[in-house]
Image (cartoon, rainbow, N blue to C red; front, top):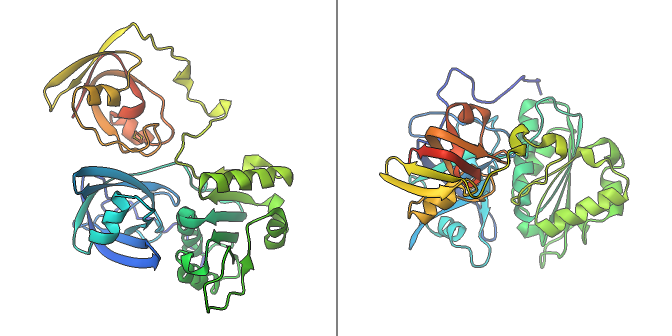
Length: 361
Ligand code: FES
C-alpha cells in the first residue's frame, strides 16, 4: 500500500463546524443493542478531527433534550462522513432513543469534536491497543486511520468482550488486519456463543496474555479504553510488569489527573469567593449576580438559562459559549481548542467570571 502523507480533509474544502446540523445517512447494527450511526453534512462540508476524539449529540428524547457524548468511531482519513458507535445500556434514555428512532435523513445537532485521547502526529512505531466492550471505538478509529495512511506502524490490538457476538466492528477490523501484516488482532471472550466455534482466547486479560500477544510490550505505546475497572486492572498489570507508564494512555470520561508540568500556567490564580461578579446572558436579556468562584454554567442554571452540558469538567466541549465582554478564569481539560479560545469562546462548566462578564446566550 502506498504511503500517503495525510488523508484528513484538505484545507481547500469547507470544514464542518457544529453550527451546522448533521444529517444521518446510515444506521448499521454492530452487535446486540449496538449500532454505528453515520452522518453527512447537507452543505458538503467535510469533517476534521483527531482519531480518538468525541462528539456530543443533542438528542430530542421524549420529555426534553439530552446531550450525550460519544467517541467518534470513524477515521478522519475518510472525511466525507463521521460516525459514532453506540451501545444502549440498561436504563439508557438518549442512546436507546438513537437505536429506536434515529433513521437516515433525520437531522441532529452536534457539538465538537473535542477530547485529548489521540495519537501524536509524530507516530511511534509500535502500539498496543487494549479495549473492552464499547471502549473499542477510539481504537477502531485510530486503527482505521493508521491503515488508511498506509504506514508500517505496528499495531497489536487486543479486545475483550463478553461473547463473540458482542465484538463490535469485528468484520471491519478483520478486513483491515487481513490486508496488512502490521495490524494483528486478538479477541478475548468470557463465554462462547452457543453452537458457534470460537478459536480465539477465552477468559480475562492477564499478564501472561499480554506477554503472548505482544512479547515486546515494553517497547510499545499502550492505548487503553473500556470500563473504569477494566482500565484500572490494565494499569495495575502494566505497572506490575515494569512498563514505563509515561507511554500509557487511557480514554476516560472522568476528569483527567494532570501531571504538574501539564497544568495550565494560570492555575495559580486564587479566586476569591467573597469577590462579587456577574454574568450577563445577552440574548436572553438576563444578568445574574454571583461571585468569582461560581462557574458560568452554575450561574446560568441558577438563572433558569439552559446551556447544553455533558461532562461538566472541561473535557467534552458541550458547554462551549461565546464570551462577548469581560474576563473569566478557565481551567479546562482539553475540551476547547486554542483557536476557539482565541476566537473568544469559553467552556461554561469550568470558567469563573472575574468581575462583569457577558456571554452570547
Ligand atoms: S460540559 Fe463538558 S466541557 Fe463543559
